[in-house]
Length: 447
Ligand code: ADP
Image (tube, rainbow, N blue to C red):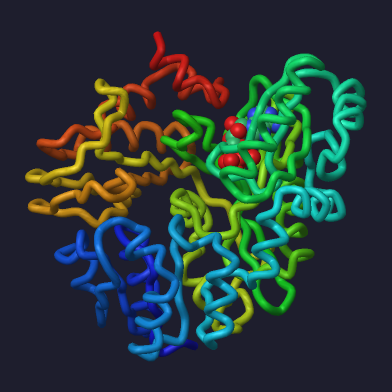
């Protein structure tokens, strides 16, 4: 096991990693930017190293400085958390070259699953359900038109290097398809320096259901069941829950096992999420694989008892997974609400500034993952998430009741937050009945 690891991240995930490391008896080094100089989580780290100014490009994205900090402090591993460098295969490679363990997949596994075409090909072999579409990159427009005619419109053209919703175009007919291919290619070159695009069926009304998986360096992989993340705004998840409601057990187990098989075939070590869209007929289609720990990982921790962050550190150190698939039992239901310092009445404008009041919810089955405290000043440089409220109940009904009660206990001020929006969402009939699709929140906000 490692003696010391460096955390190349900030906020609640830095705190989350510190906690798991401490349980494992591992010392932690936190790198931080000048904007985070007085941040609360730094007090829990064994060592801290300032790596630059507030903007991420001058600090949390500076590979050279992070590696220097790791070398200076004799850190044996680097945990990237999520965001920043977490899905940067070059960073994982630099870590390896410097003989520092990247706490995540190998650069090869990351690149294989991070490229949407190679990921889709591997998924096909593993039996993971994928969208019908082109087998690989669109080389000739005619070939794309032929495939679109076969599978039927609407179709979506997507960049193989895609991320953040860039390089995607929906086409309802052949004329739109011609434009979609060219403009998606142009946007993909501008955004990713890689113009490769492919085509797949576009699902008009779907739910987002994903599978949490874990792999080790000994060829083992397990799944921790699924999560529903259908409640989104502009592709940003707001509420996540698990297990995904309204999915038959046989369907669920088959898809979850296929997701584990996919990462096993990719020789993947660490935590990953295989994301799918699901239609009303419970057909699944893989969207992509996120090769890192996700914001919503506590949902899966609550329903299985597995500490995902601890496992990710253990497997990076070369240990086998400490859980076999048949030891992982589904227990109850969990829901997570992301608490963002944003003003829903002002088009979700971020609200940096001083938090005077911070009174988190508590009680049985309630978990708050947050790095803030009264007197904390939210810097303007980063993501606006100030915490996550997670509840666990014996079933979905109890979890919803618990979430309503816990949201009512949260007192945060004077900045505006998304808490009142969550209070509304968890009362909506669509949410209670799990009768929703990925556009339901936007439709509600528009009305
Ligand atoms: P990115 O990596 O850019 O986030 P994804 O492949 O995850 O790209 O897609 C982002 C979002 O676009 C999805 O969450 C979904 O809402 C929508 N989307 C992508 N592919 C499809 C599809 N085939 N049908 C319907 N919606 C899609």
